[in-house]
Image (cartoon, rainbow, N blue to C red):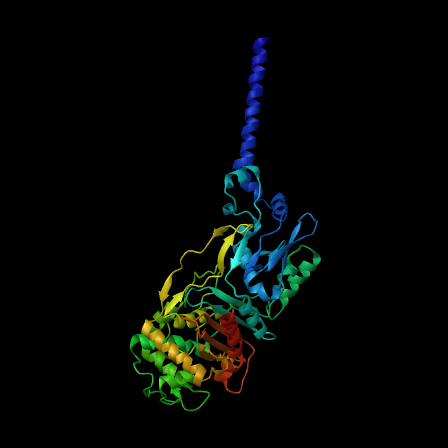
Length: 485
């Protein structure tokens, strides 16, 4: 009898061990697959069971969380959602996350292991840390000035600090309120359908995800390439630049919007944006040097993140001479985001160095302890320092004597470049108005801000002055906000 009891006890022990092994397999080895199984709602419920961390501008949150009392308890809220949507993106219980809400999702939702000193313990107990906060580099005044300047127009503004690459403003218009996508009601579905059907594409981040022909603002790159290559040694000497200029190998004649561009010195041609002079200059520089300089500024870079991805700005490296002439004045296949053109202006202001842009100053726990700060970003030398000095002088002339007078700020040194980009079939579309600039206050040791503005629905009597008339005042307001902050 005792033998049967021992056998039964051994068998029960084996069953118990098997049960423990299986429980360990389910709870440890298979936990990840169960967590990610769409049929498991526990993860989703837990995700929204506590307030989400915040995104901060100038130390103040522009996001929040609202207790709905429902199963998915907390919904995302936004302060000045229209103003900051190109930065925050949205966090939706139905449609997921975008922009900073997406790239910083683990930290904001509290699932990032860096938020707790004992991540293994959290894994075992299934506990979740409070959501952390994202501190941005934005300047609230600059962001507001850019948004108000674009009011009623399609376009975008990007502003950076030249010495560090910190993004001070990132605005896209028209915009939208991310809060309408936060919940999971029928109203959320209607808002999603309406925003996606809107022909003005309010959810498109034009500052970093839309590329435009940069028009005459690209002449900053062309002039830098010419000075670096030694093609130009005296910007005040008469050039051999016919008006009109026949594109090499074709019968197509390129003209200017105004008079006085025939054989114009490069200083005057830059001030008054002579297409014929710069188209020929690009051909004289050559495809290899033009492409090398453009890429040094950041064109053709496919891996730029701020931390969300940025659409690549492009300069075609396979062009013939006629195409090179058009590319050198920001036409043909040349395309740029407003952020890229702000980087171009920043390089001029920063002694020829391009600092990779960044939008996040640091991330913290919910009680303010720093979790992460960005590491030193690579620096590229886009042009020789002596070339940068000359380019600053030329851009200052554009504001003091040329087409960029509307960007002048009393007491500050301002450099700029206007541009008008043709587009559409037969260039029939309303030209895009561009302005790129930088500014240095009278008490500053170095330029404090570089700005790029593009307005899609602008028009003027003289195309090359469109950027000066429409986009330059917006850039001036953004620069003033930074200098006065």
